[in-house]
Image (cartoon, chains in turn orange, yellow, blue, purple):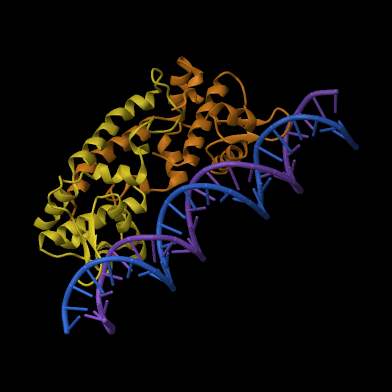
Length: 148
Length: 148
DNA sequence: ATATTAAAAGACCTTTTGGTCTTTTAATAA
DNA sequence: TTATTAAAAGACCAAAAGGTCTTTTAATAT
């Protein structure tokens, strides 16, 4: 559904928040391991997220990643759009052609409610709400546990 | 939603069928122009579709692409899967993690009905049904008409 | 102060996707 | 029977995505 960068970004953000709830401030090595992503690539992605203002970090001893808790909850959609752009949420949805504004193909119309549902899903779910969900249950859910 | 190859493949197939209804057998140049795709790439993709058995072709004068009309209608899903594999229709849908069979994250559950809708859409719509839709209305719908 | 720790920066590499172009093969009309 | 037409085959190229690694900067504990 999303590209790797977005996947790792979302997993990483949720993991950081999950640890922050426990009073911890994880570093790149720990995060990469726990979200099952390549270490250096994870570092690069987290740095980008910091630059974009989604996340905070400190260098040096005791350093790591954390959230500014005074900020509002972060909808998945904000992260997805920042990384992938608007594409996922516009156009015909099938690219079968470029529908003009008043001439939609039948796919366009059939896809409209689906696009709406996706939009709702990524707007309503936030990094924080997911972290809360995971925290109630099994933290292992973030790691790859089956061969699937 | 889909990659370029799938997009061009679907557009090309619909266009071929649209012309076949009119008793014509279009070639690569015409198809590429009408579906707004690169000529050589379109050729390559159509050849793949022929090899996969979705489409027929003849070389030489009067040659071009056409369907075996004795075959059943071709669901979009068949084409999409042949080109992109299973990925679009399995897993968590968010890749937020790899959910094991019995431990789903809340996204997994929220996404399930959406995946179902998409599945239904690409299973019910066929190259032929789309061609029929286009044929009733505006053929121009296949070409890019706005700057969007 | 300085050794240590950990993120930031950025160069670099690999794979996949998207796209181009030339040569070969096959069909058919003259 | 050959000139013409059009797809098939496949080599090749470019951009984007995904990933690795080294060097630099900043924080902090001693």
